[in-house]
Length: 497
Image (tube, rainbow, N blue to C red):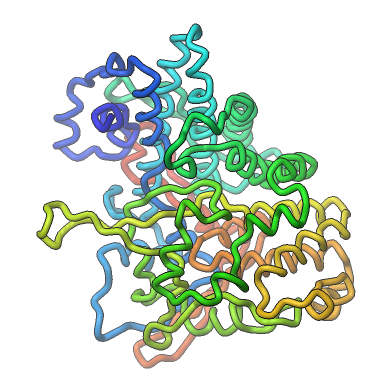
């Protein structure tokens, strides 16, 4: 399975153009004949999800990060350079081997697409095998998800009602069988059309019964519907956001069973226990999990990221409910803070050597995001009462000592807290602020910044501790992450700077 995954690599053609890789690719082997059973297809699809994370560079590019100043007692993790580049909105130019970098996420995501395409080629060649259909559904959903993440990060964000004619990303549908194919980026609109085709074709084929072990690491009906809801929120098709969310969270009571229990069972957990629980597959909120080679569990060490300013304002400052969030961020050494969401797994290259690679488990899709996506769809379509219902269901699991009489949010409460008279604008502001706090260190704030044209402000400290503020405004080309430089050799134009 690893051999198949390695051979069909867009990364090897588009990015790894070093001389050693060129030599390896002088002749491209075709190992598709190794796929000869349903079991091997299932094994291959384990590789159809990116083995890298984007949450670290998304988070540091967003307004959920701050400059905390240099530390004198720690020299930094090996990937801190990529996180520094993200905070400074500078392009990362390394070639794609650094965990947590924009290059690595691009490469690993196209690797995942190659695995999905290899599986689909085999499945499509055996139409008589009906038991392959659930795996076809998974492969289509995985390919759609991967392209969606790529086009959302490396191209201008989709704008509902606009032409969306800016360059997108290559939408790849075939396993790689040639040494140097040429790719076209197409437009953002064209990529969205192809994503939607995969999504709508694949979703009805998803069957929860095919994976008896580790089901949270494969697309299920719940996670497929959650992805559909996210996709249609970005696309601006509000009725479909509501439709797909309702397949997972139909009633408030049902939703509460799938939301993170911040103000109940999480409250008693110490930091080490919470880090383990947060990304457990048994956590009800986690609809789809992925593994990623990453040192992001050490985010509290780094200069740029979660610090005292963000925790005191976003996490523990006043909020529209009038109550206090039950989140569990804690100081490591002031002003360096930890969100206590990620537990590092370390795989030694050789047992006992002490050398190896750090990994984390990443919540790719959650019920917590899902209910907020529906709330936004309700608010944007003028259904204020239903938007408030989702907001208050969400808050009922977030506010310490929650009491509906004291903490329920109303339109009047929103108008008073924000000074926003327009109900729709007030609801959207409320939802975005709730999500900002909820997903600290998880990167999702970046998508809201792009979709809603929010200005990002970062503080920058000089050697004397004096602070200045820099801004990243709507329309700035640095809001689109850069393609890896060697992608030019595959015929791709880089993003403007």
